[in-house]
Length: 151
Image (cartoon, rainbow, N blue to C red; front, top):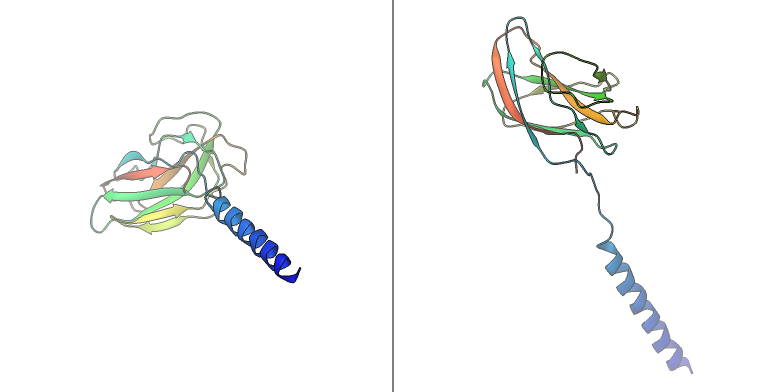
């Protein structure tokens, strides 16, 4: 009787282990709009802010930015912005709302990737974008990739 209980106990433990391991594959993080889009910002003496095109913001994850080109001495600042509508990239706020809650990701240099904390989703906006600034009135051009959600 004792041996039979041990065999049944081992079978039950093995079944639980198999079920636990098979369910691990079902647990994953999902950010629906994480594919990168290109951006290019031309800063001048009088124009030192640039908005990326708005894209659907589908979860509360951070935004993502990678700077792929620009001056070797230049640095970017980034903030998360929200909107109720799709907006083109450009230099005017055009209905975009600051959703950074005072958080600024600064000193982003060429070759660097960063995650941008934002509250676009939590504040109820359907679309997000980045406001980029070079912080100085020096002409420069930067380019890179970004996404409204991160993995």
